[in-house]
Length: 500
Image: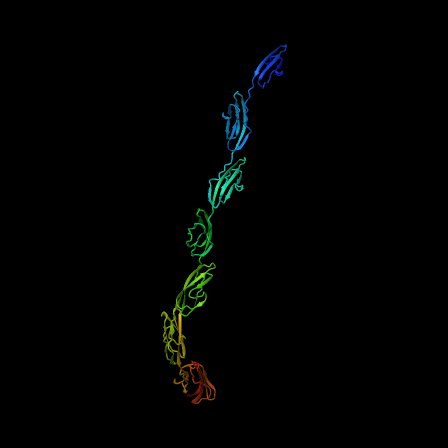
């Protein structure tokens, strides 16, 4: 600078400005002429030292990790943002970083750089896997996009085969991370619980697992291959098979248990020997009896027997019941021997019975002419030949026998040959009678054929009254028709002399 000393300036190199910018080492002079035309000259040696060149490069953007910033040997001393005095600076955080470099001449240079450190996704597939059947590998939501071995782009990968599997995860900043896991897959054992079963209540069931497992374990306290009796209902049983590698697999079987039906064989029956019984059960669809009995069909039991019926329902379930059929022996009745008696005499009926329990009830018929038809030996006084039937009952079982009491009639009809209705109280009434007469009709005619008396009630007799002429003695003709108690007809006629 010429210091504003005059009006005109002339520098080395021809510059006429008051000031001169020197950018190179050298000797510089200036001549100044003032307003009086006077001049002055001065000379100066100028030395220009080079400043250090600092270039940290372009701004940096990277995923995770660190960035080494290098001042590239531009000087002797360095001063970084944050106070570091080394040539290089290790940067692990996003920020604007600057360095001042001072060289041996004391000249300085500065540069800045914008560093962006984006976080990389964290991927951890975990330790190597030894698994039964299959395993799900999960990239744990570490980023936005996924790429598995085999090109799957899902966050998780279902692995069912042994192998090495890796995943590359890329987040929204484009940063990636990769992890690898060694997977060993053991095959599940094959397990078969067997076919579903349907049984009736009380039936033992055996469940046995099959396949290539080394052991089988059941739920519901069932022991493999051991019979047990399930309750009524439908239950699903689960069997777990274990392989030599400790891998598990399961299968199920349904066991349905039907309730037993209720069979009723019927009420106890009592029949007499030789009698018939019918056994009819209820509660099932079909019935089978022992001892050759057919349900609902008459049969003749030979002795007291307990009969058992087995009923079967639509599910094939069975149950039993029994019934006792008591056979009571029939007593043997004996009415005695046939007997012949004379008319008007008695006969003793000698009934006896054998067999049975001995608690007999007696009944004779017909009851006519019997003293007591409810005893074993009543007295009979029949007027005609009669067949008496004896019925002996023992606990409801009866036996019959008959006896014939023949009556010897020797029937007589008596008609007097004369009578004298004179009022003396002797032989005043004409009576006609018979010792075995059931009905009688008597008609009396006088000698001229006039009917003077007719009656069917021979108990009253004829008092001798008539119409017509009569002598002291008169002869009348009578006609008699009688029927005996056995139906025998008697017709007769004769003469009766009426004596005055």
